[in-house]
Length: 244
Ligand code: NAP
Image (tube, rainbow, N blue to C red; front, side, top):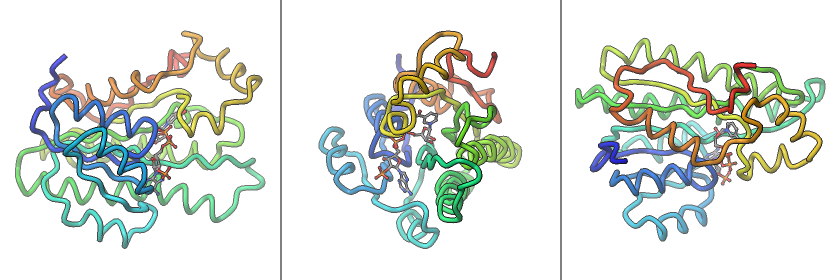
């Protein structure tokens, strides 16, 4: 389906692996021009070989200064996907300062910083735009050993609404997608134990985890004008987990 994204310039964070990488592929296939931002150069090299024309930017988004240097002059961006995140799993009583700082630094602070850079450009050009934040079902349900991750995603849901409120008058839509488990590197690290996986699967009415494509389809819908009246939403891609 043509989503009308041809020629639009998109920026995707966390583009090296998983959902971000597949989002770049899908946007490239739709004819969008893509800036791919990630932390590991080898991932970006492979991505550019697969999708000629993609502009790679290698930066650790947990550094405010490095991010400003890398993206401060990124140029016009019409579509932004804030996808990069870390899931550092620790029991609540063992949560460390380092895990807390890194999690909020990547999962929330970088979203604010990159969105500021991009939306200031959108406002200056007066053309509007669309932003999708990749949140999680974990934003709305407590999961054992996920206290920090859940908190970053809960904050991201509210940030999505607050951004939608302030950026709406500039014709910038801001939405979130909230997937259940997806078997990417992140998903495999946290859900490969069959007993743990079964516990989660039993709470998902559709009885399966999400495929990467399920999440990418929702992201592309929210980036496209097919969702032109939707902003401030948190769209579950969770097989019904949040409904139960
Ligand atoms: P993933 O396979 O771990 O990929 C994450 C990507 O983000 C990697 O390319 C990683 O690069 C990059 N990244 C991480 N920290 C970064 C940083 N500081 N600076 C720049 N890039 C950074 O994860 P995923 O499963 O695709 O997850 C994508 C999004 O979906 C995340 O927001 C996650 O919270 C959300 N989500 C995932 C699941 C799941 O079960 N997988 C479920 C719900 C929501 P490096 O590998 O080089 O660090």
